[in-house]
Image 1 (cartoon, rainbow, N blue to C red):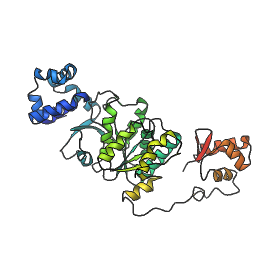
Image 2 (cartoon, helix red, strand yellow):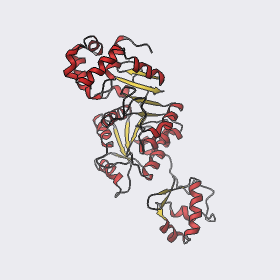
Image 3 (tube, rainbow, N blue to C red):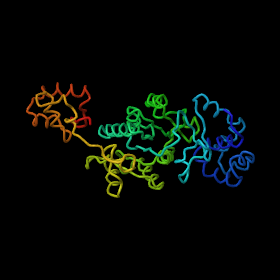
Image 4 (spheres, helix red, strand yellow):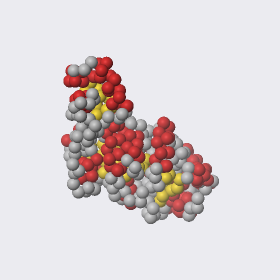
Length: 366
């Protein structure tokens, strides 16, 4: 990888521990940029930066960032520099964009039609299924889905976008060489294989430290034209993404959920304060001006010509048409025994028509 001296100095400072960034910004201002800091980096900065930060930067400078460049090469990754042509315009316009963004995969040039989808790591079945459904519908219309590769809502959003044949971008709270969480490694590879990208502002070997994630949330929002909250409690870390979105003047959407569910706390608060309601992909497409008019919505049963009143499964589907039902409610509504329902519910679940939810409940997959 060939970099100019200025680019090398910018990579050097970007790879510093996050706790040193504010002090390094001061040094950049003092010396007229990263190269100025590189050329004037002396032991007098030992106390300013602290022993660990100073030693790390001194060693990295002495090697001319050899370990960083090797790891980037091994990951087939590259740095993008703020102010240069290939740096995302949407990210460059936020108040505090990263000076260097490390990228694996194919990062779209245009994020005009893009949405960040965020929510709880402890997503409910409802949250995960809705995130996947909405992401898939948006991806099918050419909308880029941006999220954080975390457990729960993030993973479901990436999966939905991929299932919709679209592009999705994952923003990490760790380095590109330290994918987190590890169980999403296959999902990360699928993102790369299917034309998406994984990005981070952190050094390739940076660990997923707790304070990295709130900072990375400004990038998730910054890349996107809008942010959609699926579900989260009031004290969730997801709240920081919404705060960044509001500060960056992005459109904010929220998915309504059960009013007594913990994951509905933050969406309900946002909806009360004026956020856009999102019940499906069409709400985003219309509000953002990405489609001129609402496509006709038809009920699930109307879209399934094979389901008629003579079909043994019809009473179950009809009972679930308006809302989820427990096994006991289905017994009462259909007049069938638990044994009869059990077999039919299993077949419907295998065929992808229904899904199990918490509390022995069942719901249509819409």
